[in-house]
Image (cartoon, rainbow, N blue to C red; front, side, top):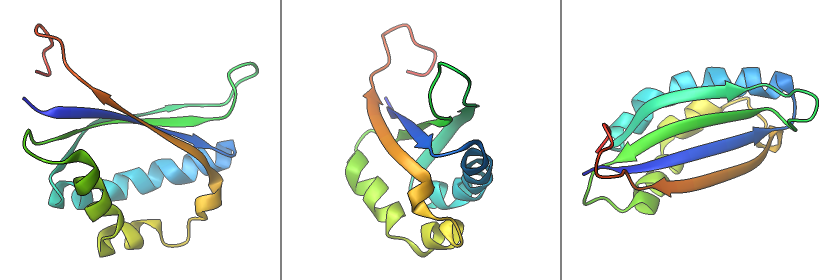
Length: 109
């Protein structure tokens, strides 16, 4: 059974969300090289009452992999540095990570 993680990035502005969305397209090959599979990426624009804009990414790791070890390997890789070139990390306000455990009937089990 794969290990799933929901990653939620809160961005400083609508413009930062647009820029970070294009960066996620670049992340896909680099994440795959580090045995991290992307199942989907979604955006939630800022609206009155909903707070800052956010980007959600559902990723998975192989059963035996240490999730933090895989992510740390990617974050220290030349692929990640190349993807992020020119993007001010200060435009990301927060990153929340949740490990998700599929239920016995989940199609993603």
